[in-house]
Length: 103
Length: 362
Image 1 (cartoon, each protein chain N blue to C red):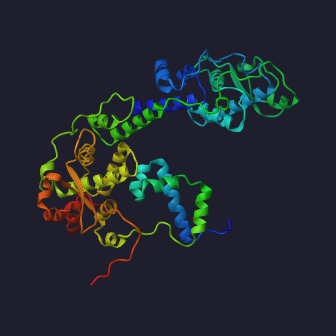
Image 2: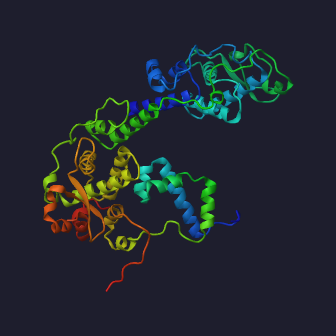
C-alpha cells in the first residue's frame, strides 16, 4: 500500500477495530473477551501485533471486513432493545450466515 | 483503598528496583518497605540479594572521568525533568535509570549510585540536605552537576568529554543489569502484586471480605486458606427448586454470569479475573434492571464450577433450543424435563421485556 494513499472506509474500520481490541486486550484480557466475544487465544495473537503488523494486515486485507457481523445478527436486531445486550452476551456465535428463509 | 494503592505501588517499585540491580537498603529507602520483608519477599533462595555495603560515596560525581560525569549529568537532567513534570521521586529515579540504560551499552554507574546521586540532588532518602544541583554551562548550555550553592564548580564534563579522561574512577560499583545480563527477582512478588490488585477490584465491586478471602486463597504466600465449604453471604439460594424459587430476571442474570465465566476459564483465564470481568459484563448487560450482588454471583459460580469449597456442582448450564442461549438448571430440578426448556429465562425476557427490564430504562 502506498503510504500517501488514505485508507478506504472498510480498511479504516478494520484498523480502528483491531487497534481498539488490541488496546483493550492489553489492558484487561478477560474484559476484552467479554466485550468482543473473541477467544483468549485470538486476543493473545492480536495483542502481540506490532503497529507495523497492524498496518500490513489492514492493507493486505483490502476491501473486506475483518470482523464481520455475527451469525445471530438477525435475531438480535429483531429482539427488544433492552434484551439485545443480554442475548448478545449469552449466545455463543460463529461466523455470519444467511438468515433462515421464513415461510 | 488508598492504603492498598500505596502498597501496590511500593511492591511494583521494589520489583523494578531489584531488576535494575538495587541492594536491599536502597529498595528500603525508595519504597519504605521493611528490610525483612524485602529480604524474604523481593528476594528469595533462588534469587539472592546483593551482598555487602551499598556503594554510596560522597565523591561519586567529581572524582570520576569526564565521560562518567557527563553520563551522570544526563541521568540527573532526565530525573529532574520527570520530577518537574509531577512524577514522584521513586518513579522518576526508576524511569530515568531505565532511560539511561536504554542508550548506553555498558553502564558507568549502578542503580545504587544513581539513587545516591538523586538523594544528594534533592536532599531526600539517604541525605538530609541537598549537596548537588544542576546548573547550565556558560559555554555549551548543557545542564551539569555542580556542588550545591556553587561552592565548587568543576570543568564542564560535556565540554571536556572529548578532550581525554581525568580522575580516578573507572569502574562501576554495584550491580547493573548489563553486567548481570538479566537480574531476576522472587517469582512470588509479581503474584503478590496481582493479588493486591485483584483485592482492590473486588472491594470496588462490593465483594464481602469472606468472598475476597476465598478468591485470593488461590495465590501463594497469602494468609487466606481455601474455603472448606460453600461461601454464601445471607440466605442460601434455593438451588433445590431453582426454576420456581428464583425469579426469572435473576435466573437470567446468574445464567449470563455462569456462561461468561465458563467461556473465560475454558480459554485459560484465571478464575479471579474471569469472575471480575464476568460480573462487570453482566451488570452492564442488565443495566435496565437492578444488578445482583457480587457475592450472590460468586455463590452461583461456585455451585456451577465446583470451586471455592464446593466439591460437586449443583447447577448446570443447559442450551435452549428456541433462543440458542444457555441457561442455568438446578440438578435437583431436572426431573421435569421439557418443562425446564419452557422456563428459559431469556425466552421469557424476549416475550415480556417490559415486565423485567423497563424499571430502569433510560
